[in-house]
Length: 363
Ligand SMILES: *Cc1c(COP(=O)(O)O)cnc(C)c1O
Image 1 (tube, rainbow, N blue to C red):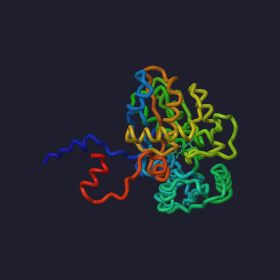
Image 2 (image 1 turned 60 degrees about the vertical axis):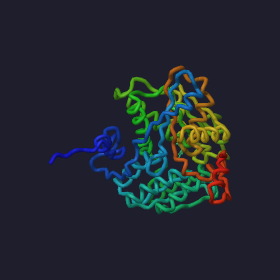
Image 3 (image 1 turned 135 degrees about the vertical axis):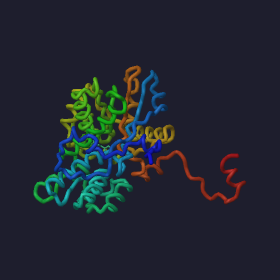
Image 4 (image 1 turned 120 degrees about the vertical axis):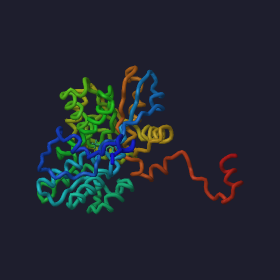
């Protein structure tokens, strides 16, 4: 009997997760127990309606990291942080979170048979993220304070108690997250001209830059992108050059006033001749709706900051350039914002009869 593969089977290599896929670039050994949900390998999707808004033969793609197992790029860092914590014999991990870190930490920690403690700013975590952390079995502590305060607390907790810190100040988080840049280069065959990315605690922009530089040194790309970081106007310390005491934005995932990776992000911006810009909540919501209604891509508000930023500075994009916007999280995370800010509404109270439905459809 001969074995024959179906088209789908031969086309789709089973994806092993990013630690196996990029093992040679990551600080893991044969002794590292890999805790994975087969994260990574997310699609790089062309967005022609956005490209048309810019014109001048600019090519635009989104790196849709909302398709990771827990719905955000945080999984890339968490598979590394949790695997290394397990290798070190940790029994519990802790993080401060605007929501996505807690979902990822909870999922990977539980999979690795560890306890997960998460500190969140009370009232500022999107519904989907809270639902995830609870169902995964995290121990969720809501503090009467913002993310920046929560991070200060968990840093001290990790110093004084037997819990491993898995915020992006844990260097393994950035190691995992840099694989986003690898995947972009693997898909395009080179680095893009611009990389547009939302910036909150500034770990991801730092990680992407690490990834591009490492691939460049390894000869996988012959250029480096300009790193374009976008912050919400009410939470834009890197734009203003000083911490923001009371950060405010609808994009709760980037509602951060004192980024932990401040210096590293500035170093990436400087070395890449990139820039930081602030985008207003109105610009964020416009980009959020455009992505969904014109491209069919549902991301969360913080993610749309990368596209809002690109549209804000579109006249600066060189003719014929290739631009990648990172969409950091899935739109399903935050159904409240989607419903509240959608331009469409449910037409209610329609009789269950053909004429009534046809009339409601405008026929
Ligand atoms: C964490 C997060 C960010 C910000 O990333 P940083 O590494 O903190 O700059 C942006 N968008 C989403 C959806 C996030 O979860």
